[in-house]
Length: 341
Ligand code: SF4
Ligand code: SF4
Image 1 (cartoon, helix red, strand yellow):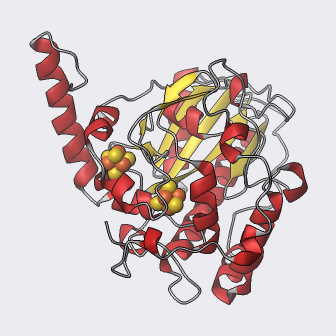
Image 2 (cartoon, rainbow, N blue to C red):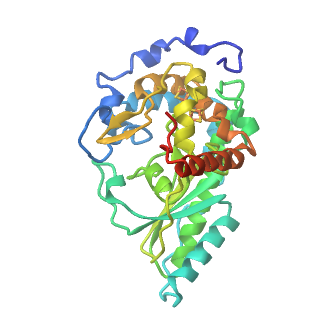
């Protein structure tokens, strides 16, 4: 696969000497627990305070280069991320059923910029192991769609900023949706806190998004959703408001990945592999951190793998999901394994 410059970038990518000097001794894959057969919580690895993570100097170098480009600097510094301070929690709680509360919450979030909304019981194992354990019982996950035309311009450079700007624009939209949803909950008399990228908080949101029905993990390490493919970003709200959990949504994206090579061939640094790996006791698709991050840093966030994923093309995911579901049902009827050999 060739990138937008018409060349397979692996042949041309040279680690910038400044960045090369900042690579820590420890492998990011070890920090992530690649090859570890026992379960453990994740460790903070990126998008945290630089002095709290071994790759902090690389991250700071990336952020500094990003902020050198005026449109990148202003999109976060001046972009609208919603109310900076959340409302006080209302003194009185509304007396309604959980069903009514969930319907009201989801409808509010969808009317306030979220394109996807799901609810999961908070699993304490989603908290990073070196962070204070989150004790809120519920997590509301929000998704915002990205403009695929802009995303398809990945990777970005100082001159072609479309893709990275779109990522930042959608992180800002996700932040607004989360802040307004958190305020709605506070208006109902319950505590809430809002969490939005690109910075990571004290817990990893991707497993929560999968648990609440956003989709399946793809070979490129991102969720594939039956409506938007991988062309969306996440934000979240933690709360003590009694809610009802949604179910996970498995429609065959994982099966599709076992036969697809598109992101593997497109990744300029061969960070995506054809086999699942054991990571902290769980077998799953895994992207090589040590190969991905240097290129990611030098391209203001890369994004090639999610842009080229067939599921991300506008209008394609619903069709593919239907096809994969039919295939599953047919194979189940025939008594065959639902995963193609
Ligand atoms: S984001 Fe990382 S894994 Fe994806 S294409 Fe870019 S370098 Fe490869
Ligand atoms: S490009 Fe293909 S293999 Fe990669 S995540 Fe998308 S469907 Fe899966």
